[in-house]
Image (cartoon, rainbow, N blue to C red; front, side, top):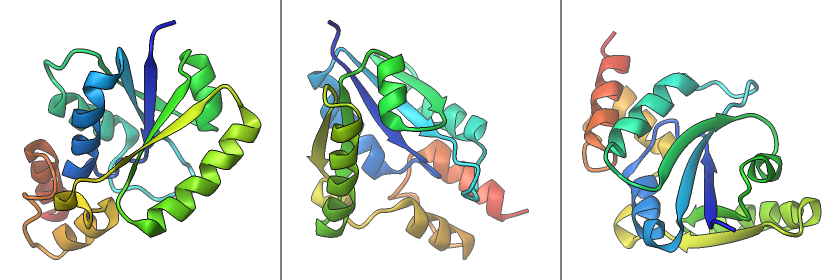
Length: 160
């Protein structure tokens, strides 16, 4: 069976922390699916299509990377894609508490699917999509926290 990891998230926006997780996981799997979650109950800055487009530009030319959208439970999406691995990044202990609880529920729902955690590089341990949006909303530079294409999209979004 092909080793496929699903890296789910809202990625609103995609940050250098997300990029770091993918960069380090890339050699570990035959395929990584960056799965942009669609959550109708959550107000997003960027549409799912915009997020997929930006992430696609970030990973242009990379092998083994696919970008997709999904709704519903991550474990159901993993089954649909024949993946037995959910990839998650952890920035701090607070992330661990939340992610651990989700991984336990996922294990109950789909015992064959494992969650792999990668610790964020220290350089990105404070970076979150929420913080990036707030800083950008106030006209401050976030170029060290996001890929260029995302930074440009944030400037456009907030300069209107």
